[in-house]
Image 1: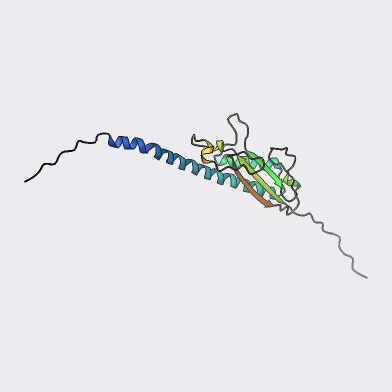
Image 2: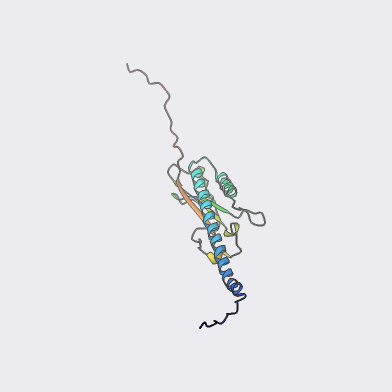
Length: 186
């Protein structure tokens, strides 16, 4: 004898309810991954800009202003904003002579502005690039959510992306050569 099984009523809307619970979590994970990827990309670009600035400073041929302009151009060429909404440059570029402790004429709270043309051969020059996170932020998530905190550097603001590079000054030591022809001994 066959017994009839009771027919279950279809669960209309169950998938929609499950999706309503799962979708916000999936979107949060997706946006978080996207934002962390952007921060890593920006950190790499800032580190490269600092390294290139330190390399240029080590030649001893470029001034502080020329190196700062070159670093800001490097950031701009790589898709990083260097100005705030008011059009003011808000990226801090600092150059200091680590060997002598000379930070140029920078005041308290300002980035070091040592002129690398004044460095002697083999003195350590440090270039610091301090980029506000708001310049590279894609998602509308505040920095505190992903706070890695980089407030340890002098003059850096909490939540900034900071790149540092040190390079020994490779300025040539001037030499003098005696161009006179020696006399034949008698």
